[in-house]
Amino acid sequence: MVKKLVLALVAGGIVFSASACNTVKGAGRDVTSVGKAGEDAIK
Image (cartoon, rainbow, N blue to C red; front, side, top):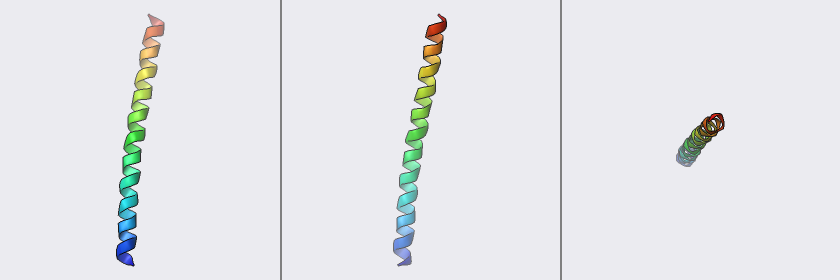
């Protein structure tokens, strides 16, 4: 029973970490695109 609980927690942690990485990458892309749009508007 304890082994299953630990396995479930580890699996959940891996999924959470993977989704957090994707979110950070997406936010980085958004910031980059907004910066580029701002530069284009200024020119």
